[in-house]
Image: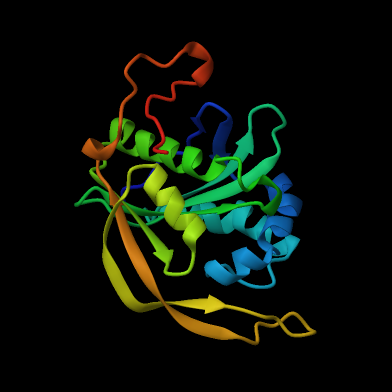
Length: 214
């Protein structure tokens, strides 16, 4: 039987990361319809509510059970509103290494949710699951994702040339009509790269024990 991540929930100062539920389908479909999600990710397009429900009901559980990674919904503690999605994939259990990707809803951008969620997952991986390496790959033109990598303390290891496809405009029927190749920047985070706070985190911080870079 393949090694796999347990079903889990991860709490940070403002966010709860939890398994996807079918009730997330409307919010997930709306989030995926954004033009920046289309451009920078490889998610299917169009991403309908039916596809979102299938991801929650079948695809995400199968991804976890097969040992490939885990898919987590990112929600606000105060409102329970869906603000993003985090996925671990390409997990190597022998090397204790995995790759993380993230999506943030258009309305929630600029609030620091993406680095907070990624850092929360990194903390869980290193402290609770014994992982030793986390990778993040960002398209050369995706400066927002690069800022997330820098804020969590990621180290740029180099460029993977022409390793990604960036999607552009869509046609009248919704199909993608413009694509171009892009380099990827490879970032890594190791346990020793995390910057611990000088004082213990207060109770209200939800066990958030590492700090973001400016």
